[in-house]
Image (cartoon, rainbow, N blue to C red):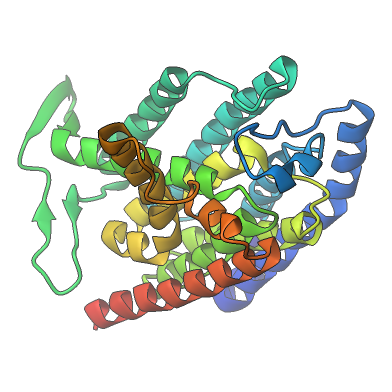
Length: 353
């Protein structure tokens, strides 16, 4: 692979090249994908209870995440470093998790198209898939990559979530460790962020732009910790999002769909675990957390009082309902994401000194 060649002597150049290649692949393939989707009449189903202005988006091609995932996969295969065992396993593991979650999203998107409604897979089915993926990822990260079952909080002692660990002896010195508390933590982190990014994907360019900014910072964090493979992966995601935004900017010619949003959320969580920045990632991806919390708060408060805290949830719809233009909401969310990403990177950098 190119990543193992002379280019590997220039890791900074390699990371920027990964951004460019992923962007180029996305921009080349998306027009063909959009054309195919239009021929097949595969379009987005809009929520009936959403903002009325969104009804005009009914039928816009969806499942753009398929091309995003292809761009990420090809770029990673081209530039990945396969001469270091632990680093190689991290890259393969993260790629598998992203693709599996994307496939789950693809099934969800396909179900929406077939049923011609905005709801695809049942919530229980989604949660079961996310549970299997996140638990398997956590166990592989601990046993194959050697990730410590701890959580590092900036400027505070690390929290040991490996205190309740079961060891299964397979013989020949092969032992499988199951740190129960850490596995549960990773499940909440991955399932939460996957669903959070999915919630963010409600306005043209919102999910693509916020993920692009957050992943750029994750690439910098991975590079700072000498994890070039993870930096290349995050760079590939960044580039794919840039290419996708060319067609997803308002008015969008294609939507990401659950195929992209769920996969990118899981990839973000996976990077957080593998770089040991689980808490810092919640700052970098603070906009995802805020969107998810807005839905939780809205649902709980309505059940208790039959009243609403927000005009509409997720949070970006609240601002739309206040009369703020969609493009302005998106740009302001990008700005907030950039600010939070800078704060997150500053916390990481200060902690590493």
